[in-house]
Structure formats: structure tokens, C-alpha cells
Image (cartoon, rainbow, N blue to C red; front, side):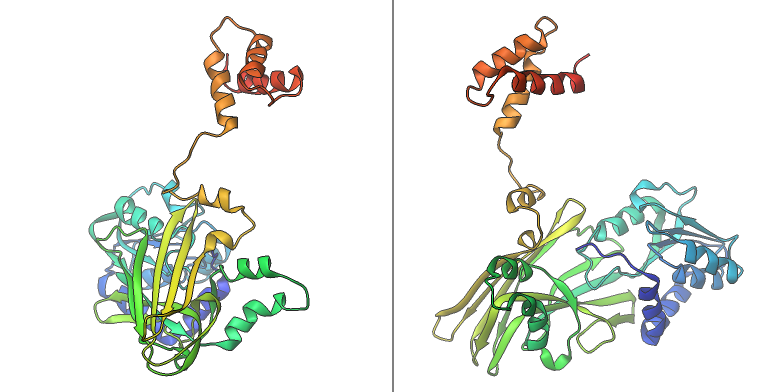
Length: 376
């Protein structure tokens, strides 16, 4: 679930007076005249403007998306000579000098989306002076069970129109999404699932168990998660339900009625895969007597058009085994000895892998494709 940040996202940041004010106060604590500041993923350069106003000598803005609006804003505010926009990903950049302060605005409602914390940790290690300040300093991911018929209905309504849409509905309910909830929708006390320390930590993935004992009758539709952000000691903000921001909704495969003293257990994990994250959440609801009323195993692997076999292969924990295609290519490579012709190798290939080629042309074409790529 990669999420690009737009100018409108930064407009909402500035419209949120508490959030904008907290960033300004945190940066004011550490930025001194003459310092170098790195603004990571700045978008329109809002945080870079604050840094310049506070006296920064140089501000590097690393922004993989287009930064034309940011450049125009720098010019409008008289900071064009002090702000350098770099249109690239941080991992591909080497700055001419290291920054005294690293500042960034969280991209989306959870850190384990898209590039995730990796880009921040890479920037800290390569672009920041030893002991430099990082804003935000820390983030906590907090979660709670949620009852919201409207949020669940928005997800399932398109697939309830008289036809059988079971496969599509299952894919939809294995997808996490942004939604806005109220504090009154929560059906359990918020619990911390993971903590990220951007100053000294190295957390790139997370997993943990959450558990609640039900205190009143309800129908639970899933789990909601959000960020509690500490910019600096005593300064921060919360994306808790009821705030101006959105949260992340982990829907269940079906709504589950619960009674007092029932137990809800959720094993939640975020693992890196390719350029994004795979989320898994296993939910068990048990009664006071110990009988299970729900046991769901869900993963974002099953939310996309990617076949599960291909999606599983994206995981670092995937254990590959040799396929027939790999075996054939290996045979061809090992047969290239500077003595045998393509035709001779193709003939041996047909014998070794009987039934894989209907005629000699197919075997020759496969050998030719390998030799053109690797042989001299």
C-alpha cells in the first residue's frame, strides 16, 4: 500500500494548527543559524521553509515526487538560494555535506507502508552528522478493536448485488485502508503494538500480539491502528480516532458479535517485501468458557491481483525451490563449454527433459535465448 503525498496532504498539515505548531516548536529547539538541515520527502517544502525562517544556512530537500511547487514557494519566500531540491530517492543520493538536523513528515497514517522506516534510517546513517537531531524522534503504533458498520459496509457493499462475488470480497477484506473513526467506535482500550525510535533505533519490521477482554456487548468489525508521534520531548501529536487525520482499518472476514468477558486476540505483523510491506493479522475471539467464535487468518498478500505464489516469493522469509524452468536453464549453462553448438545442446536438452519440447525448434530457441544473454 504505497502512498504518495500531495500538496493537499501538506495543506492539511498546515490547517492542523496543533500539528503545524508542534513541528515549528520542535524545529525551533534544535535549529540554529548557520546549520544544515535535511528535509526528507518534503513535498511542497513546508518544513524547509520553517528551517530557513529559523536561520538554517542550507536546506536539502530530497523528494522523489515532483518538487516544482516547492521550488516556486522557496522563490516566493526569498529562500531559493538556501534550499536545494533533489528529485530522487534518499538511498540514491550523496549530499555534499552532512546535515545537523533531519526532519520529515510521516507519509501516511502508518510507517510500515511503501519504503517505510528504511528511508529515514538510511538518511540518518548517511546524511546526518553524529549526534544530529531527528524530528520526529519516535512513533508508537497503537491499535484497538473497532465497531463501525459504516466503514465495513463501505468495503463490502460493492460485492453484495445479487451475484456471487466471494473471491472479490475475500480479496477486499484482506486489504488495509485509510478510514476515519470516532473515539466512540472503539471497543477496547488502545494498546501499543510497536515503537519506532528514529534517533537510535533500527526497526524495519514489526510483529506483536494484542489482546482485549470485552466489557460490553458489541459487534466488532475489525481493528483500527494509528500513530502517536513524539517530535521532541514534550512535543507531539496523536492520530487517534476523533482527530482530524485518518487511521488504518484492518477489517475482519465477517463482523463478530461479542459479549462481556469474551477475549479478542490479534497477532499483527508487518514484513518488508519488494518496495512495500506485507501485513498479516490473525484474529481469535473466544468466549469466557473457552469456545472460539472466530478464527481469521488474513494477509495483504491476498488483496492484490498478484497470484499468491508470486506474492509469497516477495517475502524475505520465502524459501525457494528449483523449478523445471530453472533446471533447464541450469542444464544449458552447464553445457556451454566452447565445444558444442547450439543445435547439439538443444538435442541434449530434449533428451534430458523429455516431454518438455514438442519439436527441436522449441529447444533450440530456449538454448539460443540463454546463449545470447550469457555466452560470448
